[in-house]
Image 1: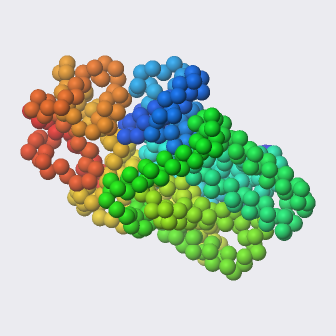
Image 2 (image 1 turned 135 degrees about the vertical axis):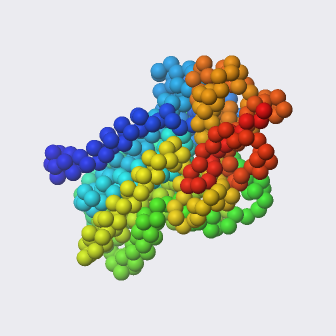
Image 3 (image 1 turned 30 degrees about the vertical axis):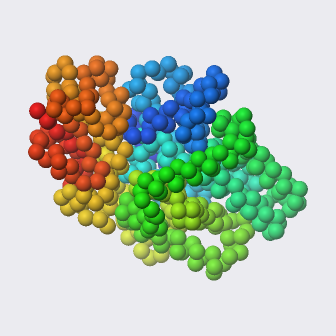
Length: 508
Protein backbone atom coordinates (compact mmCIF):
# COMPACT_ATOMS: atom_id res chain seq x y z
CA UNK A 1 0.00 0.00 0.00
CA UNK A 2 1.40 3.40 -1.00
CA UNK A 3 1.87 6.14 1.57
CA UNK A 4 -1.01 8.19 0.14
CA UNK A 5 -3.39 5.21 0.24
CA UNK A 6 -2.30 4.38 3.78
CA UNK A 7 -2.95 7.94 4.93
CA UNK A 8 -6.35 7.85 3.24
CA UNK A 9 -7.16 4.55 4.96
CA UNK A 10 -6.17 5.95 8.35
CA UNK A 11 -7.76 9.38 7.78
CA UNK A 12 -11.06 8.59 9.60
CA UNK A 13 -9.09 7.56 12.68
CA UNK A 14 -7.00 10.73 12.53
CA UNK A 15 -10.15 12.84 12.23
CA UNK A 16 -11.72 11.07 15.20
CA UNK A 17 -8.54 11.61 17.20
CA UNK A 18 -8.62 15.35 16.46
CA UNK A 19 -12.34 15.62 17.36
CA UNK A 20 -11.88 13.80 20.67
CA UNK A 21 -8.72 15.77 21.42
CA UNK A 22 -10.64 19.04 21.01
CA UNK A 23 -13.35 17.67 23.30
CA UNK A 24 -10.69 16.70 25.83
CA UNK A 25 -9.17 20.18 25.76
CA UNK A 26 -12.60 21.60 26.57
CA UNK A 27 -13.42 19.30 29.49
CA UNK A 28 -10.15 18.12 31.05
CA UNK A 29 -10.26 20.70 33.85
CA UNK A 30 -13.62 19.35 35.06
CA UNK A 31 -12.21 16.16 36.60
CA UNK A 32 -11.19 15.86 40.22
CA UNK A 33 -8.09 14.30 41.74
CA UNK A 34 -8.48 10.60 42.50
CA UNK A 35 -7.54 8.88 45.75
CA UNK A 36 -4.28 7.42 44.35
CA UNK A 37 -3.07 10.30 42.18
CA UNK A 38 -0.87 11.98 44.82
CA UNK A 39 0.66 8.57 45.58
CA UNK A 40 1.42 8.02 41.92
CA UNK A 41 2.90 11.50 41.56
CA UNK A 42 5.04 10.86 44.63
CA UNK A 43 6.37 7.68 43.00
CA UNK A 44 7.30 9.71 39.93
CA UNK A 45 8.96 12.42 42.03
CA UNK A 46 10.99 9.91 44.06
CA UNK A 47 12.12 8.16 40.89
CA UNK A 48 13.03 11.49 39.28
CA UNK A 49 14.99 12.58 42.36
CA UNK A 50 16.86 9.28 42.38
CA UNK A 51 17.83 9.64 38.71
CA UNK A 52 18.92 13.26 38.81
CA UNK A 53 19.82 13.79 42.46
CA UNK A 54 20.79 10.42 43.86
CA UNK A 55 18.06 10.63 46.52
CA UNK A 56 17.32 7.09 47.74
CA UNK A 57 13.89 7.73 49.30
CA UNK A 58 12.54 5.59 46.46
CA UNK A 59 14.12 2.48 48.04
CA UNK A 60 12.05 2.97 51.21
CA UNK A 61 8.77 3.61 49.38
CA UNK A 62 5.99 1.03 49.71
CA UNK A 63 5.09 1.79 46.07
CA UNK A 64 8.49 0.92 44.61
CA UNK A 65 7.00 -2.32 43.30
CA UNK A 66 4.88 -0.32 40.84
CA UNK A 67 6.30 0.63 37.48
CA UNK A 68 7.18 4.35 37.13
CA UNK A 69 7.39 4.44 33.34
CA UNK A 70 4.34 6.65 32.82
CA UNK A 71 5.01 8.77 35.90
CA UNK A 72 8.42 9.83 34.57
CA UNK A 73 7.07 11.62 31.45
CA UNK A 74 4.45 13.29 33.67
CA UNK A 75 7.22 14.45 36.01
CA UNK A 76 9.27 15.67 33.03
CA UNK A 77 6.35 17.84 31.89
CA UNK A 78 5.93 19.18 35.42
CA UNK A 79 9.60 20.13 35.70
CA UNK A 80 10.02 21.35 32.11
CA UNK A 81 7.12 23.78 32.40
CA UNK A 82 8.04 24.78 35.96
CA UNK A 83 4.65 23.81 37.34
CA UNK A 84 4.54 24.47 41.06
CA UNK A 85 0.89 25.13 41.93
CA UNK A 86 -0.97 21.90 42.60
CA UNK A 87 -3.88 22.84 40.35
CA UNK A 88 -1.54 23.36 37.39
CA UNK A 89 0.32 20.13 38.15
CA UNK A 90 -2.78 17.95 38.16
CA UNK A 91 -4.40 19.66 35.19
CA UNK A 92 -1.24 18.93 33.18
CA UNK A 93 -1.31 15.32 34.36
CA UNK A 94 -4.95 14.90 33.39
CA UNK A 95 -4.44 16.30 29.92
CA UNK A 96 -1.34 14.20 29.27
CA UNK A 97 -3.04 11.02 30.47
CA UNK A 98 -6.00 11.71 28.18
CA UNK A 99 -3.76 12.32 25.16
CA UNK A 100 -2.13 8.89 25.65
CA UNK A 101 -5.60 7.36 25.90
CA UNK A 102 -6.64 8.95 22.59
CA UNK A 103 -3.38 7.90 20.94
CA UNK A 104 -4.15 4.33 21.98
CA UNK A 105 -7.63 4.66 20.44
CA UNK A 106 -5.98 5.82 17.20
CA UNK A 107 -3.57 2.88 17.45
CA UNK A 108 -6.59 0.59 17.89
CA UNK A 109 -8.10 2.05 14.71
CA UNK A 110 -4.87 1.31 12.83
CA UNK A 111 -4.67 -2.22 14.22
CA UNK A 112 -8.31 -2.98 13.36
CA UNK A 113 -7.88 -1.66 9.83
CA UNK A 114 -4.75 -3.74 9.32
CA UNK A 115 -6.58 -6.84 10.60
CA UNK A 116 -9.87 -6.42 8.73
CA UNK A 117 -9.24 -3.88 5.91
CA UNK A 118 -12.62 -2.39 6.75
CA UNK A 119 -13.02 1.31 7.64
CA UNK A 120 -16.33 0.77 9.43
CA UNK A 121 -14.75 -1.83 11.71
CA UNK A 122 -11.73 0.42 12.25
CA UNK A 123 -13.91 3.41 13.18
CA UNK A 124 -15.86 1.15 15.53
CA UNK A 125 -12.57 0.05 17.10
CA UNK A 126 -11.68 3.67 17.91
CA UNK A 127 -15.12 4.23 19.44
CA UNK A 128 -14.98 0.98 21.46
CA UNK A 129 -12.10 2.58 23.35
CA UNK A 130 -12.85 6.30 23.32
CA UNK A 131 -16.59 5.96 24.04
CA UNK A 132 -16.41 3.37 26.80
CA UNK A 133 -17.94 5.51 29.58
CA UNK A 134 -15.80 4.35 32.50
CA UNK A 135 -12.58 4.45 30.50
CA UNK A 136 -13.34 7.95 29.30
CA UNK A 137 -13.39 9.35 32.83
CA UNK A 138 -10.49 7.20 34.01
CA UNK A 139 -8.39 8.46 31.11
CA UNK A 140 -8.07 11.78 32.93
CA UNK A 141 -7.40 10.81 36.55
CA UNK A 142 -6.19 7.19 36.55
CA UNK A 143 -2.46 7.09 35.80
CA UNK A 144 -2.28 3.42 36.80
CA UNK A 145 -4.76 1.34 34.86
CA UNK A 146 -5.72 3.29 31.73
CA UNK A 147 -2.08 3.92 30.69
CA UNK A 148 -1.46 0.17 31.00
CA UNK A 149 -4.50 -0.55 28.84
CA UNK A 150 -3.32 2.06 26.34
CA UNK A 151 0.14 0.52 26.14
CA UNK A 152 -1.31 -2.97 25.61
CA UNK A 153 -3.16 -1.60 22.59
CA UNK A 154 -0.03 0.06 21.21
CA UNK A 155 1.95 -3.14 21.88
CA UNK A 156 -0.63 -5.20 19.98
CA UNK A 157 -0.26 -2.84 17.02
CA UNK A 158 3.56 -2.96 17.13
CA UNK A 159 3.54 -6.77 17.26
CA UNK A 160 1.11 -7.04 14.34
CA UNK A 161 3.26 -4.72 12.21
CA UNK A 162 6.45 -6.60 13.14
CA UNK A 163 5.09 -9.95 11.96
CA UNK A 164 3.55 -8.49 8.83
CA UNK A 165 6.75 -6.69 7.81
CA UNK A 166 9.05 -9.35 9.29
CA UNK A 167 12.07 -7.05 9.39
CA UNK A 168 14.44 -6.63 12.37
CA UNK A 169 13.69 -2.90 12.66
CA UNK A 170 10.04 -3.58 13.45
CA UNK A 171 10.94 -6.25 16.01
CA UNK A 172 13.22 -3.66 17.60
CA UNK A 173 10.31 -1.20 17.82
CA UNK A 174 7.96 -3.89 19.14
CA UNK A 175 10.51 -4.85 21.81
CA UNK A 176 10.93 -1.24 22.94
CA UNK A 177 7.16 -0.71 23.11
CA UNK A 178 6.48 -3.96 24.97
CA UNK A 179 9.35 -3.30 27.39
CA UNK A 180 7.89 0.11 28.17
CA UNK A 181 4.51 -1.53 28.76
CA UNK A 182 6.08 -3.92 31.28
CA UNK A 183 7.66 -0.97 33.09
CA UNK A 184 4.24 0.63 33.42
CA UNK A 185 3.07 -2.57 35.14
CA UNK A 186 5.01 -5.80 35.50
CA UNK A 187 2.16 -7.79 33.90
CA UNK A 188 3.44 -6.52 30.54
CA UNK A 189 5.91 -9.42 30.61
CA UNK A 190 3.14 -11.67 29.33
CA UNK A 191 3.67 -10.13 25.89
CA UNK A 192 7.06 -11.81 25.47
CA UNK A 193 5.98 -15.47 25.21
CA UNK A 194 3.53 -15.06 22.28
CA UNK A 195 6.13 -13.17 20.20
CA UNK A 196 8.70 -15.91 20.71
CA UNK A 197 6.09 -18.57 20.01
CA UNK A 198 5.10 -16.85 16.74
CA UNK A 199 8.75 -16.70 15.66
CA UNK A 200 9.09 -20.42 16.40
CA UNK A 201 5.94 -21.14 14.38
CA UNK A 202 7.35 -19.09 11.52
CA UNK A 203 10.48 -21.20 11.55
CA UNK A 204 8.43 -24.40 11.48
CA UNK A 205 6.15 -23.08 8.75
CA UNK A 206 8.93 -21.41 6.79
CA UNK A 207 7.04 -18.11 6.94
CA UNK A 208 8.43 -14.61 6.92
CA UNK A 209 11.07 -13.12 4.65
CA UNK A 210 13.61 -15.83 5.42
CA UNK A 211 13.40 -19.53 6.22
CA UNK A 212 16.71 -19.65 8.05
CA UNK A 213 16.89 -20.29 11.77
CA UNK A 214 19.63 -17.67 12.02
CA UNK A 215 17.34 -14.96 10.68
CA UNK A 216 14.53 -15.76 13.09
CA UNK A 217 16.96 -16.09 16.00
CA UNK A 218 18.26 -12.66 15.10
CA UNK A 219 14.75 -11.21 15.24
CA UNK A 220 14.07 -12.96 18.54
CA UNK A 221 17.33 -11.59 19.92
CA UNK A 222 16.52 -8.08 18.72
CA UNK A 223 13.06 -8.22 20.30
CA UNK A 224 14.25 -9.62 23.65
CA UNK A 225 17.22 -7.25 23.80
CA UNK A 226 15.04 -4.22 23.04
CA UNK A 227 12.42 -5.38 25.53
CA UNK A 228 14.91 -5.84 28.38
CA UNK A 229 16.71 -2.57 27.58
CA UNK A 230 13.46 -0.60 27.55
CA UNK A 231 12.21 -2.29 30.71
CA UNK A 232 15.47 -1.64 32.55
CA UNK A 233 15.83 1.99 31.43
CA UNK A 234 12.27 2.92 32.40
CA UNK A 235 12.45 1.28 35.85
CA UNK A 236 15.34 3.00 37.71
CA UNK A 237 14.67 1.02 40.90
CA UNK A 238 16.36 -1.89 39.10
CA UNK A 239 19.53 -0.04 38.15
CA UNK A 240 21.60 -0.66 41.30
CA UNK A 241 20.82 -4.38 41.65
CA UNK A 242 18.72 -5.70 38.75
CA UNK A 243 18.20 -9.31 39.86
CA UNK A 244 17.77 -8.64 43.58
CA UNK A 245 15.42 -5.68 43.09
CA UNK A 246 13.43 -7.53 40.42
CA UNK A 247 12.77 -10.32 42.94
CA UNK A 248 11.91 -7.72 45.56
CA UNK A 249 9.22 -6.30 43.29
CA UNK A 250 7.40 -9.65 43.24
CA UNK A 251 7.80 -10.10 46.99
CA UNK A 252 6.27 -6.67 47.63
CA UNK A 253 3.39 -7.38 45.26
CA UNK A 254 2.64 -10.67 47.03
CA UNK A 255 2.85 -9.02 50.45
CA UNK A 256 0.46 -6.25 49.46
CA UNK A 257 -1.98 -8.73 47.95
CA UNK A 258 -1.89 -10.81 51.15
CA UNK A 259 -2.52 -7.66 53.19
CA UNK A 260 -5.53 -6.78 51.05
CA UNK A 261 -6.91 -10.31 51.40
CA UNK A 262 -6.51 -10.17 55.17
CA UNK A 263 -8.11 -6.76 55.33
CA UNK A 264 -11.06 -7.97 53.29
CA UNK A 265 -11.38 -11.12 55.45
CA UNK A 266 -10.76 -14.01 53.18
CA UNK A 267 -11.12 -15.40 49.69
CA UNK A 268 -12.61 -13.44 46.83
CA UNK A 269 -15.02 -15.25 44.54
CA UNK A 270 -13.83 -15.95 41.00
CA UNK A 271 -17.12 -14.44 39.82
CA UNK A 272 -16.03 -10.92 40.86
CA UNK A 273 -14.31 -10.11 37.55
CA UNK A 274 -16.93 -11.47 35.11
CA UNK A 275 -19.69 -9.88 37.17
CA UNK A 276 -18.17 -6.41 37.14
CA UNK A 277 -17.15 -6.65 33.48
CA UNK A 278 -20.73 -7.66 32.65
CA UNK A 279 -22.46 -4.78 34.45
CA UNK A 280 -20.07 -2.00 33.37
CA UNK A 281 -19.63 -2.78 29.67
CA UNK A 282 -22.17 -1.39 27.14
CA UNK A 283 -24.53 -4.27 26.47
CA UNK A 284 -24.07 -4.66 22.72
CA UNK A 285 -20.27 -4.76 23.08
CA UNK A 286 -20.68 -7.26 25.92
CA UNK A 287 -22.84 -9.58 23.82
CA UNK A 288 -20.64 -9.31 20.73
CA UNK A 289 -17.46 -9.74 22.78
CA UNK A 290 -18.74 -12.90 24.43
CA UNK A 291 -19.92 -14.18 21.06
CA UNK A 292 -16.58 -13.28 19.52
CA UNK A 293 -14.62 -15.18 22.16
CA UNK A 294 -16.66 -18.32 21.45
CA UNK A 295 -16.48 -17.80 17.67
CA UNK A 296 -12.69 -17.40 17.68
CA UNK A 297 -12.20 -20.55 19.79
CA UNK A 298 -14.48 -22.55 17.48
CA UNK A 299 -12.70 -21.19 14.39
CA UNK A 300 -9.37 -22.23 15.85
CA UNK A 301 -10.45 -25.81 16.43
CA UNK A 302 -12.04 -25.99 12.98
CA UNK A 303 -9.00 -24.66 11.10
CA UNK A 304 -6.02 -24.60 13.46
CA UNK A 305 -3.49 -24.19 10.64
CA UNK A 306 -4.96 -20.80 9.72
CA UNK A 307 -4.06 -19.67 13.25
CA UNK A 308 -0.62 -21.26 13.18
CA UNK A 309 0.60 -19.76 9.91
CA UNK A 310 1.65 -16.10 9.81
CA UNK A 311 -1.83 -14.75 9.00
CA UNK A 312 -3.96 -12.00 10.50
CA UNK A 313 -5.98 -14.68 12.26
CA UNK A 314 -2.93 -15.79 14.22
CA UNK A 315 -2.95 -12.48 16.09
CA UNK A 316 -6.06 -13.74 17.83
CA UNK A 317 -3.98 -16.34 19.65
CA UNK A 318 -2.20 -13.37 21.25
CA UNK A 319 -5.51 -11.69 22.11
CA UNK A 320 -7.03 -14.84 23.61
CA UNK A 321 -3.87 -15.36 25.63
CA UNK A 322 -3.88 -11.76 26.90
CA UNK A 323 -7.54 -12.07 27.88
CA UNK A 324 -7.67 -15.48 29.55
CA UNK A 325 -4.08 -15.54 30.83
CA UNK A 326 -4.39 -12.66 33.34
CA UNK A 327 -7.81 -13.92 34.44
CA UNK A 328 -6.30 -17.35 35.14
CA UNK A 329 -3.37 -15.76 37.02
CA UNK A 330 -5.75 -13.76 39.22
CA UNK A 331 -7.85 -16.83 40.05
CA UNK A 332 -4.87 -19.18 40.52
CA UNK A 333 -2.91 -16.81 42.77
CA UNK A 334 -6.03 -15.63 44.58
CA UNK A 335 -5.10 -12.03 43.77
CA UNK A 336 -7.48 -9.53 45.28
CA UNK A 337 -9.42 -7.18 42.99
CA UNK A 338 -11.37 -4.16 44.15
CA UNK A 339 -12.80 -0.90 42.79
CA UNK A 340 -14.71 -2.62 39.98
CA UNK A 341 -12.29 -4.42 37.60
CA UNK A 342 -9.86 -1.55 37.01
CA UNK A 343 -6.82 -3.72 37.81
CA UNK A 344 -7.62 -5.74 34.68
CA UNK A 345 -8.74 -2.97 32.34
CA UNK A 346 -5.82 -4.05 30.12
CA UNK A 347 -7.70 -7.22 29.12
CA UNK A 348 -10.44 -5.13 27.50
CA UNK A 349 -8.58 -4.53 24.18
CA UNK A 350 -8.45 -8.30 23.67
CA UNK A 351 -12.16 -8.52 24.46
CA UNK A 352 -12.86 -5.61 22.09
CA UNK A 353 -10.94 -7.32 19.28
CA UNK A 354 -13.18 -10.36 19.73
CA UNK A 355 -16.14 -7.97 19.61
CA UNK A 356 -14.88 -6.67 16.25
CA UNK A 357 -14.36 -10.24 14.98
CA UNK A 358 -17.99 -11.05 15.79
CA UNK A 359 -19.36 -7.88 14.20
CA UNK A 360 -17.20 -8.19 11.08
CA UNK A 361 -18.49 -11.72 10.51
CA UNK A 362 -22.08 -10.56 10.94
CA UNK A 363 -21.50 -7.81 8.38
CA UNK A 364 -20.97 -10.55 5.80
CA UNK A 365 -24.51 -11.85 6.35
CA UNK A 366 -27.96 -10.66 5.28
CA UNK A 367 -28.45 -8.76 8.53
CA UNK A 368 -25.64 -6.31 7.69
CA UNK A 369 -27.95 -3.29 7.85
CA UNK A 370 -29.36 -4.36 11.22
CA UNK A 371 -25.84 -4.77 12.61
CA UNK A 372 -24.79 -1.31 11.43
CA UNK A 373 -27.88 0.31 12.95
CA UNK A 374 -27.40 -1.56 16.23
CA UNK A 375 -23.75 -0.49 16.45
CA UNK A 376 -24.71 3.10 15.69
CA UNK A 377 -27.39 3.03 18.39
CA UNK A 378 -24.93 1.67 20.97
CA UNK A 379 -22.36 4.33 20.12
CA UNK A 380 -25.01 7.06 20.41
CA UNK A 381 -26.17 5.66 23.76
CA UNK A 382 -22.59 5.59 25.09
CA UNK A 383 -21.84 9.10 23.87
CA UNK A 384 -25.15 10.28 25.31
CA UNK A 385 -24.22 8.93 28.73
CA UNK A 386 -20.78 10.53 28.54
CA UNK A 387 -22.27 13.93 27.67
CA UNK A 388 -25.27 13.89 30.01
CA UNK A 389 -23.33 12.63 33.03
CA UNK A 390 -20.16 14.64 32.59
CA UNK A 391 -17.79 14.48 34.45
CA UNK A 392 -18.95 11.35 36.30
CA UNK A 393 -18.71 8.75 33.53
CA UNK A 394 -16.81 6.46 35.94
CA UNK A 395 -20.13 5.63 37.62
CA UNK A 396 -21.61 3.98 34.48
CA UNK A 397 -23.64 0.79 34.86
CA UNK A 398 -25.48 -0.90 32.01
CA UNK A 399 -29.08 -2.09 32.02
CA UNK A 400 -28.25 -5.49 33.52
CA UNK A 401 -28.62 -3.88 36.94
CA UNK A 402 -31.52 -1.79 38.14
CA UNK A 403 -31.28 1.99 37.96
CA UNK A 404 -34.21 2.58 40.27
CA UNK A 405 -33.95 5.27 42.96
CA UNK A 406 -30.72 4.81 44.98
CA UNK A 407 -30.44 1.14 43.92
CA UNK A 408 -26.86 1.50 42.65
CA UNK A 409 -25.92 3.51 45.71
CA UNK A 410 -27.08 0.80 48.07
CA UNK A 411 -25.42 -2.11 46.26
CA UNK A 412 -22.26 -0.96 44.50
CA UNK A 413 -19.26 1.29 44.90
CA UNK A 414 -19.82 4.38 42.83
CA UNK A 415 -17.19 7.14 42.83
CA UNK A 416 -14.74 5.03 44.83
CA UNK A 417 -11.84 7.42 44.08
CA UNK A 418 -13.64 10.50 45.32
CA UNK A 419 -13.20 12.66 42.22
CA UNK A 420 -16.67 14.13 42.74
CA UNK A 421 -15.36 16.01 45.80
CA UNK A 422 -14.16 18.59 43.27
CA UNK A 423 -17.72 19.47 42.30
CA UNK A 424 -18.74 19.70 45.97
CA UNK A 425 -15.87 22.08 46.71
CA UNK A 426 -16.61 24.10 43.57
CA UNK A 427 -20.17 24.49 44.81
CA UNK A 428 -19.05 25.70 48.23
CA UNK A 429 -16.52 28.27 47.03
CA UNK A 430 -19.06 29.50 44.50
CA UNK A 431 -22.02 29.90 46.86
CA UNK A 432 -20.54 30.53 50.31
CA UNK A 433 -18.96 33.98 50.34
CA UNK A 434 -17.37 33.59 53.77
CA UNK A 435 -13.67 34.32 54.13
CA UNK A 436 -13.29 30.91 55.76
CA UNK A 437 -15.33 27.83 54.85
CA UNK A 438 -15.09 25.22 57.59
CA UNK A 439 -15.37 21.62 56.43
CA UNK A 440 -15.39 18.54 58.65
CA UNK A 441 -12.63 16.00 58.19
CA UNK A 442 -13.76 13.12 55.98
CA UNK A 443 -11.46 11.13 53.64
CA UNK A 444 -8.20 11.76 51.69
CA UNK A 445 -9.94 12.69 48.41
CA UNK A 446 -11.25 15.80 50.17
CA UNK A 447 -7.67 17.01 50.67
CA UNK A 448 -6.74 15.91 47.15
CA UNK A 449 -9.47 17.98 45.55
CA UNK A 450 -8.74 21.04 47.66
CA UNK A 451 -5.47 21.03 45.69
CA UNK A 452 -7.53 21.37 42.51
CA UNK A 453 -9.11 24.65 43.63
CA UNK A 454 -7.72 27.98 42.47
CA UNK A 455 -5.15 29.38 44.97
CA UNK A 456 -7.46 32.15 46.17
CA UNK A 457 -10.26 29.65 46.85
CA UNK A 458 -7.91 27.12 48.42
CA UNK A 459 -6.99 29.60 51.13
CA UNK A 460 -10.62 29.89 52.18
CA UNK A 461 -10.99 26.19 52.99
CA UNK A 462 -10.33 25.07 56.55
CA UNK A 463 -10.63 21.36 57.38
CA UNK A 464 -11.03 20.58 61.07
CA UNK A 465 -11.67 17.41 63.05
CA UNK A 466 -14.61 18.73 65.02
CA UNK A 467 -18.09 18.46 63.51
CA UNK A 468 -19.53 20.78 66.18
CA UNK A 469 -17.33 23.61 64.92
CA UNK A 470 -17.69 23.07 61.17
CA UNK A 471 -20.16 24.35 58.64
CA UNK A 472 -20.18 21.56 56.05
CA UNK A 473 -19.51 17.86 55.57
CA UNK A 474 -18.71 16.28 52.18
CA UNK A 475 -19.46 12.58 51.79
CA UNK A 476 -18.87 10.33 48.79
CA UNK A 477 -21.46 7.57 48.83
CA UNK A 478 -19.09 4.69 48.14
CA UNK A 479 -21.57 2.05 49.27
CA UNK A 480 -24.88 3.12 50.70
CA UNK A 481 -26.59 6.32 51.74
CA UNK A 482 -25.12 7.79 54.91
CA UNK A 483 -28.21 7.66 57.10
CA UNK A 484 -26.29 9.19 60.01
CA UNK A 485 -26.23 12.47 58.11
CA UNK A 486 -29.91 12.42 57.16
CA UNK A 487 -30.69 14.89 59.94
CA UNK A 488 -28.56 17.53 58.25
CA UNK A 489 -29.61 19.62 55.29
CA UNK A 490 -28.32 18.51 51.90
CA UNK A 491 -27.27 21.64 50.05
CA UNK A 492 -25.68 19.95 47.05
CA UNK A 493 -25.52 16.45 45.62
CA UNK A 494 -24.38 14.61 42.52
CA UNK A 495 -26.69 11.95 41.11
CA UNK A 496 -26.00 9.52 38.29
CA UNK A 497 -28.52 6.96 37.06
CA UNK A 498 -30.86 7.87 39.93
CA UNK A 499 -28.25 7.22 42.64
CA UNK A 500 -26.43 9.71 44.83
CA UNK A 501 -22.70 9.81 44.20
CA UNK A 502 -21.63 12.62 46.52
CA UNK A 503 -23.40 14.94 48.97
CA UNK A 504 -22.63 18.22 50.71
CA UNK A 505 -24.36 18.62 54.08
CA UNK A 506 -24.75 21.88 55.95
CA UNK A 507 -24.11 21.10 59.61
CA UNK A 508 -24.97 24.48 61.15
